[in-house]
Amino acid sequence: MNKTFQSVDEYVNTFPAETKEILIKIRKIIIDLGNEIEESISYGMPAYKLKKQPIIYFAAYKKHIGIYATPSAHSHFDLQLNEYKKGKGSVQFPLDKEIPYDLIKEIILFKLKESK
Picture 1: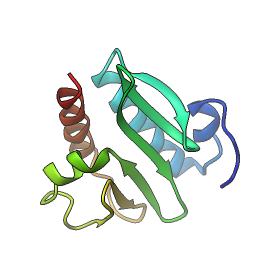
Picture 2 (picture 1 turned 135 degrees about the horizontal axis):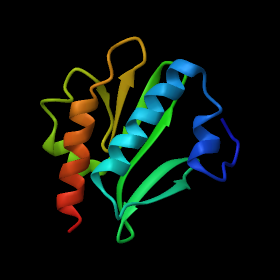
Picture 3 (picture 1 turned 90 degrees about the vertical axis):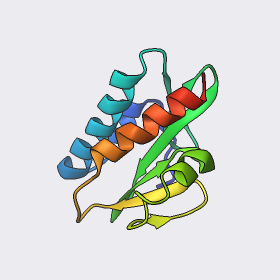
Picture 4 (picture 1 turned 180 degrees about the vertical axis):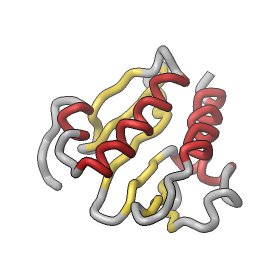
């Protein structure tokens, strides 16, 4: 997807209903946890920062949801993320399996604490 998005709503609305529902849930978790978090589009995906420090990015793909919470969070949650495909600062949650919303919440809380 090479489209430039102006808002997270615009980004989310480009996906099929099932994927859109997942993205909305992740977005709600982020916003509910950090009332000072700034929402934007960065690198073509939803991005969330606190005091200009990255907290988390997420993106949807054909077969997975990608979460980008920087290497520190991924290192901290390495065991919990072990069953998923990972990169240095990314993890892929397959769309054909249950999305671990509680784990995503823990990652965000870790990043919020780290950024204070």
